[in-house]
Image (cartoon, rainbow, N blue to C red):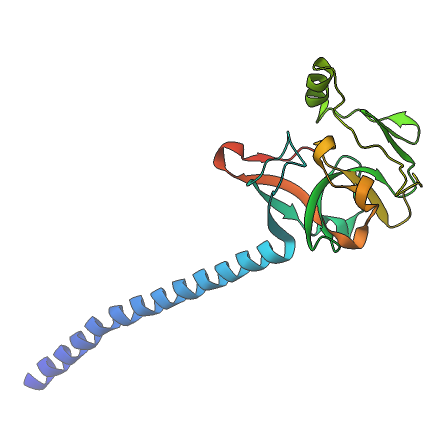
Length: 206
C-alpha cells in the first residue's frame, strides 16, 4: 500500500510538471508565428510596395512636402503606365527620385502652350489642377510658364519605351520639359496612397 501511494505521488508530480512545458511550447510557437508574420510583412512592403516622401513643391496643390506615400512597385510589371497616373521614377542625372504625373505615353504627340496641354491634338481635361489654373487666371497670369516642345527638346512625339511627365505645379516643376522623356526602366511605380500625416490619409486619384 505504501508503494502504491508513493507511485501515485510520483504520477501526480509528473502531471503537475507537464502543463508548464506545454505552455512553454505554445509561447515558442507564438513567437515563431509572429517572427514569420513580420518577415512576410517586410517582404511584401519592400518587394511590392515602397514608402516615398514628397520633397518640394512641384506637385502642389495635390501633394505637399513631408507627405508619405505608398508606391506600388509591381503594377508596371503587369502593364504600362497610363495617362493621368502619378508615378515615382529615378532621375540618374539628379541622383534622386521624382514624383510627377504622366501626361502622354509612347506614340503620343504632346504640346504644352501656356495653360493648354494637348495630346494628339486634343486638349487634356486636367481636373486635378483646374482650381489652381482658375485662381491664376483671376490674378491675370498663367499657371504655366514653361512650354513644350522647346529648344532643348524639339520633338513632341513620345518615343517607344518612354512617357512624358509634368508636375502639377506647372511653373515650379522640373519635369519632361527640362529633363526629357522618362524611360519605363527608370519608373519605380505608381503612387497609390498618402498614409502620413494622418489628416491627409487618402487613396490617390489617377
